[in-house]
Length: 379
Ligand SMILES: *Cc1c(COP(=O)(O)O)cnc(C)c1O
Image (cartoon, rainbow, N blue to C red):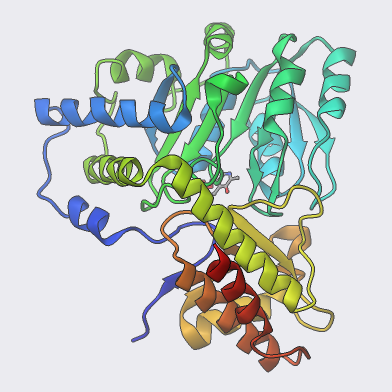
């Protein structure tokens, strides 16, 4: 049996002490102990989102919270901008269509960031647009969209800004209140170092006003119902108790380490990995704003990105990610977010070198490892 290494942008490894914390005997979700835990989790979420807004917890993967941000903000027929710069941006259009809303599709070339002026222009041309849906980090391309600037572009309009930060929150700073973000979404299995199963959504005043007008159907994902319950430290339905226990442990870990230090370490791993990519003579897939949270690498001519992913999985039980949809076969992606160490990063670099060599790419074996060691050594 091989030791499994999770180095894909989700799910990421869970710290052993968090796994142990989650292995405690179950407490009841209607007990005072759980209410106490819920209260501390709510405060921890506000700290990491950097907001005074309520942050709701849902038992679902991140997409559930994305869906809730359509169902609770809009009515059938409403228009909303979907920033489509990758697989997750396209998901916004699909959810909007599923609810009978009209997506105003803003196509962004994969690997590029959206231009805030393009969003401002669409909003100015059509005041009926009710919301703007975007990713902070478009995980399929490794690009960070300019969220702070998008908040400025939407602030004085009637449109609610909804930011999918499932892969971004906890990888780099996204100060919700300072930037004036109406809705921010995240999930448990990326930079927050937990198993999949929890999704989060922060709801600001502009979004609360839109919520009151919304006529889309909703039941499990009703913000109004959950706001009523969660502000009293309970869920409307059965809460996944062990994940709450794990989340509180992660918040304690983050507090012990400090958010700024976590962001600096994530950025360092990203810098080291990107130095390796340059040493291989390869290019980043992200032409604009390559993220610190993960690196998307263009596979060399003659090498299929999926074969690199398969090589690592089959030979070494190391899980990285390939490209999705139009990027399939062209790229491979490696995460730097969450509980991934410098030496996990070096391990990925070393394994990718063996895969590239095995697949016939000509380069100097060890050059990537050396370049990354240099970055780590000088830090
Ligand atoms: C992972 C991810 C999601 C959520 O995907 P789920 O599989 O539903 O957890 C949403 N948006 C982005 C940008 C992601 O990286």
